[in-house]
Length: 153
Length: 153
Image 1 (cartoon, rainbow over the protein chains, first blue to last red):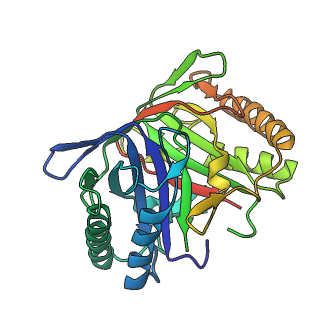
Image 2: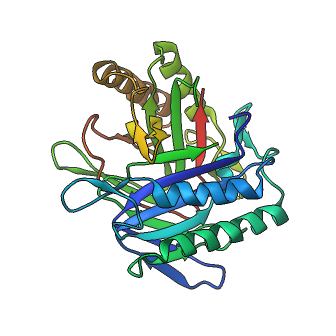
């Protein structure tokens, strides 16, 4: 993990719910949840690359069992900032020294969400929701097999 | 990721539910979910090391806000085999060539679950449940902040 700049956990879901900063709650149905962390040396290019990889990865089970992209399925997408994914275990505690600073993290997160909305808008049946940056993510999910995958680079 | 032998995703939860091979369903309350994948070169020592790290990592929020281990909290633990965490992205698809073979994976998983039960039994208030190896994990969870962390080595 020493050299990665971006880490994203993808989880397939049948339903997922997240509370936002204004205490409203957003819900997606069948689709994918993307938990995202940017590490210290992340660049704007990395943000764009991650969005493209998520939009084009074939991970979503279609009716006939084959795997499709979230855009082609079409499926819903819930994006959740998750800085803890950048933590490193040291003496029984996780440390976050290597995470990106908050302002840049917010800027990158906003750009990432905007990119994902653009990419998913190719299919008007895609619902995209995104969590509020910098708050505790109150979250619940139901899966038919979470099928967790990690994209990092 | 090229050199890792073990990858584990830890998620804090207030409730989590998993279906087992016999179609029964297990539920844990406040505690932690551990999704585990063993990669090709994993050794028995790695299994034992991972169990110790999970039992001793201070990730669980106590009443006063401080962080405790799952054993000290005491909190429940749900262990879920999750081979997909060992997948590698290649040309828009995840490949699993680097995962451990099924028989060794089952052996390591059983040992890991046994280790975790032993370590958690220090506190009789800990509930430990474990998913069935090799089946699709039908799973749901509620969190007060999933606080996802990765242990890998």
